[in-house]
Image (cartoon, rainbow, N blue to C red; front, side):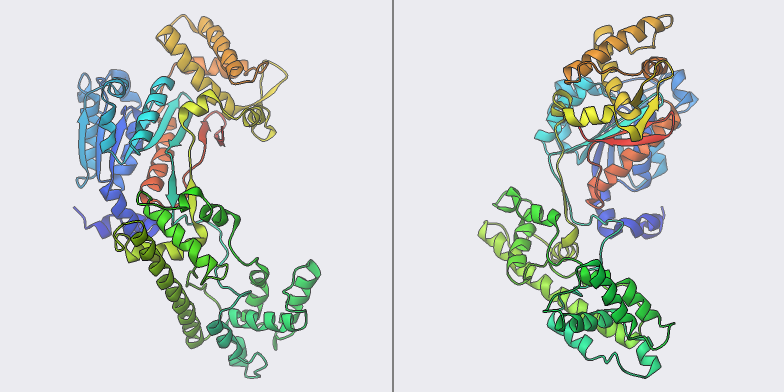
Length: 534
């Protein structure tokens, strides 16, 4: 076996040692190992998940050979769970793999406590009734849960967990934490030590834009009653002020200063998102509070006191045109401020832990340091119970999706336009009602397609009525398509849905990046997808 650092090199660059360690400690359970479940687990096994338990009570049939790459012809007639588990184990011998020959819906009914041992449960191809029951069980046991399903040319992924907190959300775009509009004494002293009127071209061309902008902001406020530029004209005038300091037109550092001038105009303080988090009820901590909320309580105290309305400084600076010596000195100033802020927050965390009768050292320095570095990017995700969504979805959102022009298609059988994603969402629920009534999914039995289309349409219209959308209908074409699928799991769709599901599993386990909020619906007919918030 290759060394972990070499074996997982690419992913370590994405989620780091801490993220990989979390994956390797995780214990994941898969319900149903058809192509959707197998493809989901394949991605996690290759990524180094700690241990997996595959649960499926069915036997391998000849038809499975056409859509599941993790079984072979010799497996026909054998346990599907055993066959898939053996294949997955071959992919990564560092993963602990075991299987249980049991039908998931039976296990949900008879042994609900079974699921409490897992970090996360991946439930694939479950019908609505089993989804609701499993969701209750996992919420009670505080076990993370992901539903994944592929059905013909459509599929869905839905996360269900009471609360998920993220420190390293890693947004694609985020404003650098440079404090150009609120420099602390050491930064201001550094900026003032640089003479922007120095005629030496080498010095002039290698003054970092941070120093340029701090000096220019001070010069502006001295003539504008202490206020920074706010209007469009003032911002344009500020850029011209910077340009006036250029000796030659090819000075990259001054061009960078002009391009980065918007960082001076940024609003001071904390974002509305962080305001919501520090004012959340969970920020009033007690002995049962999670480490995240203890650190949030410390952050709230810091912002109100030492931070003077600001979170801890991140401590990193972007690349910029500068002499090496000046850049390193500037970097040290930011790092020193970030370290000082971290020490204050750490002390507050220890004090809070002591107040709530917990070990003051129970939260590691590295965790607090990461929290401080990412304090502006914290995220809290909360998910509605599946039962609540099924019984009382947001009617305004549902109506909006039913008529959403951006995602509509033209029904060939009538002059109407409807949303593919919500149509599939409703029909995926309707086929479960169909199966509960007729003990088979629409289109599975030969010779009954026309009858099944009529029955499914009646059920779908009734479901829309139950959801408060009386008078709404679904496309005849879409209903015909769902019946034509016959509940088949196509490998291409299953692989795509499995990829999405495994990506969300990694987000949840590593607590990095922001997991999806809502129900992800894939439309394989025209290769579109949409996240429904119901």
